[in-house]
Length: 242
Image (cartoon, rainbow, N blue to C red; front, side):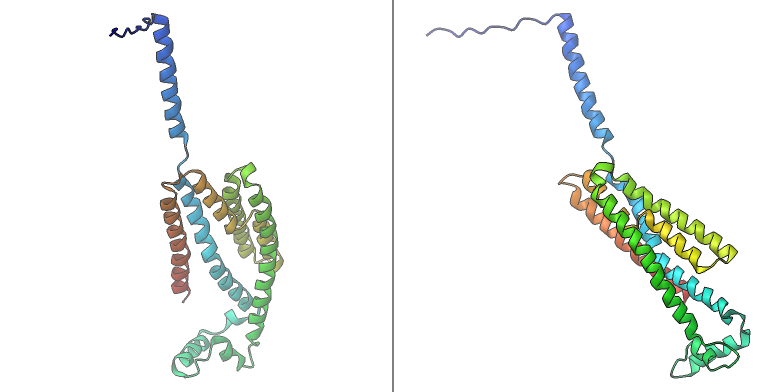
């Protein structure tokens, strides 16, 4: 039986050792940089929460503003305080629960409150159409090309639109401008996208920044935050307006 012979590797010289060490170090640094540069999925949650809070509270605030706007136009806000107190008293004592506009409809000195409701309903219809058409086109164009343009435009543009919308509303309320200016501001806001666009971008961003192991937890937390952001402002504003 012949003994096995092994050939020993040639010893590395100094230059070869340095090259091997440098290649190993650079590879480890690249791996660390790749892990560190991966964006965190939860960075999108503040923007998503903010837009949902705005989107949930905006219809309630807008409806209250429009009702008061038309009440001022038809002179209901200049009524004596005693009549308003009598109206509230009649609501508490009457079984039929007459409303504020029914109280004034029986008074010949004041116009019919149904005109306020008719004009408010007409305005809300126009406002919905003006906001729906541009927002739908923006959603289709940006949503279909989000893989090419990235997720950030889908998240940033609706926030810019809301800044323009509320800045315009401050000017409109301060100068008491007509309804045309309100509809124009709504159309300009819708061009930048709606809340659905930022939700699409946020969910796509979470998908890009997670893997199969932590993606269910990320989506669960995102959906929970979205649910709370929808419920809390509606309850708070409803109690406040009451």
